[in-house]
Picture 1 (cartoon, rainbow, N blue to C red):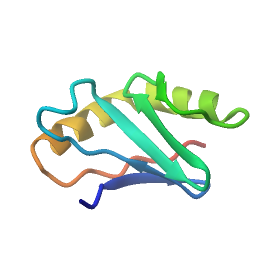
Picture 2 (picture 1 turned 180 degrees about the vertical axis):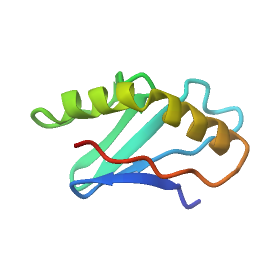
Picture 3 (picture 1 turned 60 degrees about the vertical axis):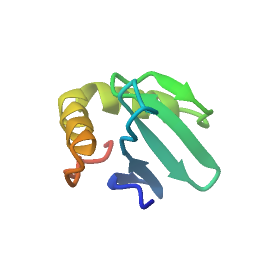
Length: 89
């Protein structure tokens, strides 16, 4: 299954999908060279480790874009294409 990318930052892809019966907590994935983590839409790191300040940067970004992330989660649940979200600054 191709997982929709809605953002990219420093070579890290931000992905989101919904799988009925498997995903209960709204979340998104970050995948990149040596990075495979999961964050809640509110910016809490749920799985994996991030180097240096990256966890703080992504957590703050998620808090700032919580509404857009929530809208994309609903789109993913409805099998509708995700909207792009601006990357962290």
